Amino acid sequence: MTEFKEFGLSNNLLIKIEDLGITKPTSIQEKSIPLIIEGKDVIGESATGSGKTLAFGSGIVEKVEPQAGIQALVLTPTRELAQQVKESLKSFSYKRLKIITIFGGVSYTPQVADLSRADVVVATPGRLLDHLQRNNLDLSGIKILVLDEADRMFDMGFILDVEKIIRQCSKNRQTLFFSATMPPKVKRLADKYMKQPKSVSAVKYVDPKKLKQAYYQVPKNFKIALLLKLLNDQEAGLSMVFCNTRKNTDFVTQNLRLNKVRALAIHGGLSQNKRSGMIKMFNDANRGVLVCTDIAARGLHIDNVTHIFNYDLPFDATDYIHRIGRTARAGENGQVINLLSKYDYDNFSRILRDNPEFQVKKIEKPYLERIQIVESVSTRPSRPNYRPNGNYSYRGRR
Image (cartoon, rainbow, N blue to C red; front, side):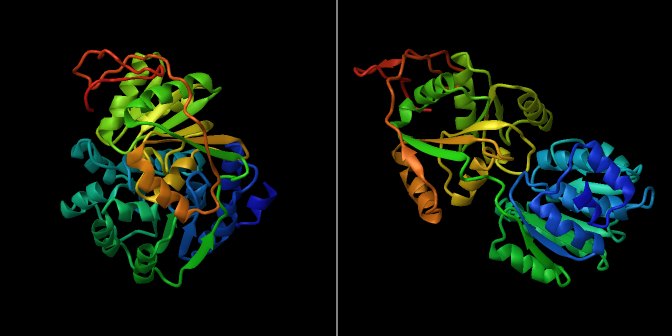
């Protein structure tokens, strides 16, 4: 705890941090916490899972007083991240702060009641703006404004909502931007709304020496059979399978379950309670598979992932970085396996062009056993289509 003591934190906060078992600051914490405690505006660039919440949360916990109205606002791109940030803030808050979440997909009425008593609000932009337009809260007393995963909020189209919210906040606030990447559009937003911000950047949390990347070339209708074989053959702990669409996520999950693989699904089409439940079940397991869209690639706290499978390759090379950043963390080994059909080649070429340092090994497709395949929830398992080389696939399109 010696290093945390040098940051100017109170003894009460130091005790809370120690109780959480945190003994050494991460790179982003070491670089940003002293500036935040001094009251500086900060732009922090660091990967998911690198300890950003404790960094900006330290400032919130130290500076916000109980029962004095809304004094801190954290904007996040997703409901899951909002809930996670709330729980993290509560875990190291030594004051009796009322910390609430505001996001869509749930009733307005309880949120209105919570806002009347809140000290700290963690929110997604759309629902918070709805409450502002209904005069359900006042942001004139904001001391600290945080944009968490700022680049993701741009990607999801929240920028206009974010700007409207920022303009409602006190001009005397401290503003903190944290993001995995800092594209020009985020920097322009910082120039517009921050006061002489200090920029800090942390090293990548994923250790490239610990991360092995490979790919298979496989026809599209063989992907599920190959994925199943790889999951069964490898001594994997927790695995994440990324798909580009909700439809593919459900398709993969259903067929893994049909073939006796313990698989959970998460995507934007599920209710908040189901999504939160899936993440908790996955985190609590020693073995298992989480099939997901890019909603799970960033921000969410998911530990001990040993394997990343890209069932679909993302269009954006940055999304690939966020996906693979879920493994090979905190000194552990990890493996990334890409399943490439002809539809993925352009995306894969773009990823390699933008990341020339990547070494991705080609592996020959193995012999694939016959498996059952269903095309959708409403259909029965279809009869596999026999292939002379021992491969089987489903009939029809999905």
